Length: 215
Ligand SMILES: Nc1ncnc2c1ncn2[C@@H]1O[C@H](COP(=O)(O)OP(=O)(O)O)[C@@H](O)[C@H]1O
Ligand SMILES: [Mg+2]
Image 1: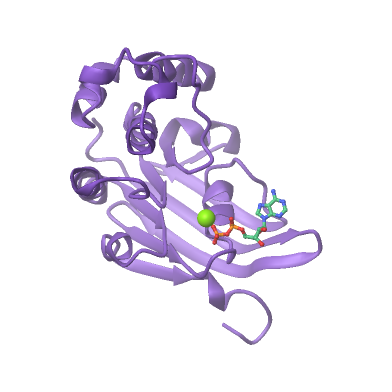
Image 2 (image 1 turned 60 degrees about the vertical axis):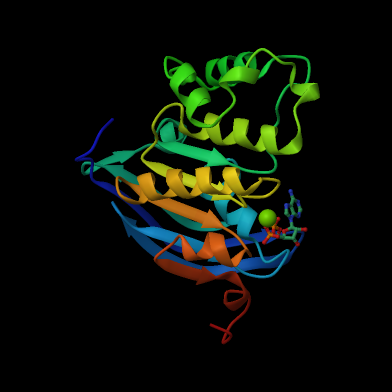
């Protein structure tokens, strides 16, 4: 695990338009190692959209997202190596086991998979690793998504509603992972949940980034 890594994520004048509707505009923030940011705002305010732009899953309409590691600028197509992403939209494969899902997704994304065993143990799915995904509960699937986000020990962890579907023990697990990443690199959580918001030191509320003069 890299401990002395300097990570910098800079977002400048970010704007996203869908179907001629401004989802958000003038979004600016800079996060450095040990920063944590909650992205808040009502349903449909653009939290998931912003997370996906940061993960380079979506493209912004205008503005920049730049990532540097130890002063070296990372090209967008390599963001995935440094970013871990948990989202309700991540697709898992029903006909494969939990273990196979991690192996397949890591393979598709070109990520190292040598951590699968310790990560599955940490997130409490090791005993169920050979069960098909189709018999996993929604909480178990959510745990698997969390496992996927940390198998490559990313420098930025992006959580979109990470505790949805989780039981109390699962919430504690998210807390411990959030704590670890906050103390090592950068943590970003998109949420409307007070507990998830409280895990982050900073906050940006997307309700305030809609049109001129509302910020
Ligand atoms: N792929 C898409 N095409 C068109 N509109 C989209 C797309 N994804 C999201 N939107 C719209 O963007 C807005 C923000 O959505 P989202 O980022 O999911 O909000 P939140 O996560 O804050 O609930 C919503 O109005 C949603 O309908
Ligand atoms: Mg969302």
